Image (cartoon, rainbow, N blue to C red; front, side, top):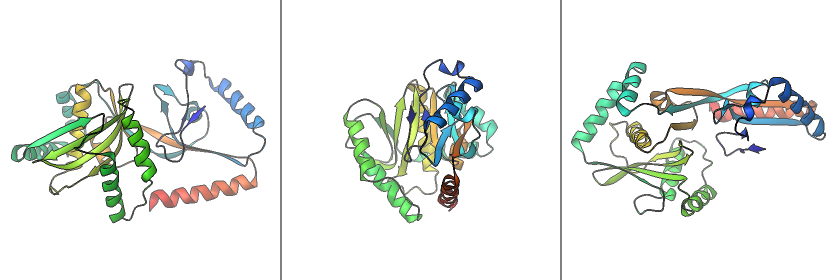
Length: 274
């Protein structure tokens, strides 16, 4: 089975626990060859946004097939306490001390409140976060895939009280300035959609300060991995201590498939380089 579509940051096979030890190159390529022969009517196979790892297992579609680089995925392995984590980041990033000074100054001069919620709340909503995010993307003339269906699906999950969705909000002097929709699953937190809300503190790196609060919350609540998901942004590099490549794979069967392959690559190049 395969999980993911064009709206997903990751698309990957379902790998059963301990099955990766049985998936050798020889076995996988035999299965792949059989699959290609079984799928008689197709022009192209396109597997996008494939992570190197599926959980703790090697993704065999990346390990044994010839993939192309798509992007990077940055994440934080939270096996340290907060002080150790920050000290390691100081050694890794020359600008991290400056970030900590900004945070300390903001806390000293203002009343800071950071809250998280796993159910509906009057303090912040999924609608607020997505609509504010879309306003920012529109100002930057960037296309957004976050629409009413995104809001509806996430609200349904939130109302289901499964505790999968985590809403986080940072308030300064009583005003919400930044918020985020995250997913939590099996001691992992996936940092999904974050946005300024009413941020008038433009002299401070509010987004990064917000992330530091989320990471601290993760450390206090048994989260082992903070995943920034797809993307190569600078702020992700500032906090991350691990990374992996995200790949794309094409298999073309005929001339029509090769033309489609060329067309898809042109679209992707335009989409991610504009």
